[in-house]
Image 1 (cartoon, rainbow over the protein chains, first blue to last red):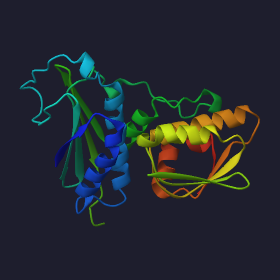
Image 2 (cartoon, each protein chain N blue to C red; image 1 turned 120 degrees about the vertical axis):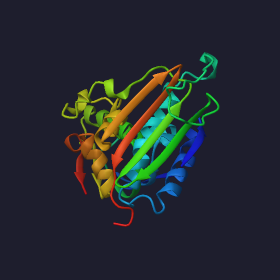
Image 3 (cartoon, rainbow over the protein chains, first blue to last red; image 1 turned 90 degrees about the vertical axis):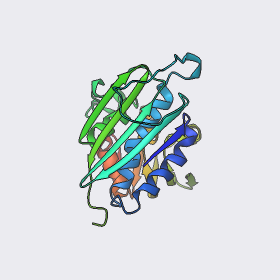
Length: 155
Length: 96
């Protein structure tokens, strides 16, 4: 199941509706908010750090990239696919700088309050909530693929 | 949608979804909190890093001002797990 969303935080309500629609019969209710969180964090990151139309460089795509149907740099594609006990989440941003979240420095969650910073918390959460992260970048196109083991939908 | 209600005696109730689409409004609301308060999260369905960041900044401001900060109560399973992963149980008083 795949859908395109405009590059704006206002699209989050539609992203949530998309996930809830997918979740029917496919996700255990206990997993749904976690999946929403994972997708929100990556989607928000793409919205905030995408280069935007003004900085756009024509993207030609590549045969090396997975098959996806994003047609506009102003849109972000989200794809969800469940097979047995795994959920595959793929987000595609066709107008991005290279940003591999696997390279981000870990957040020190043991730091005292006065030293804590909100930055990086989203990626920290995602890293803890998924089982595998893949990243592919070429020709301004970022493909983030997240694999998460999930409970049976009707457990 | 996120709802934030202030009751007397430093009691705040938040309900709904505390996500990145609520950042501007929630920043303004929590920016007006100037006393140590109890935040009842019984009706809070969902929180992401955007909500965590606003709560963290509020906590830092209240504690540095000499108060006891925010006490968070009645967190659901999802919200509690997010707080735990973020290490917030070490910087907030949490009563679930």
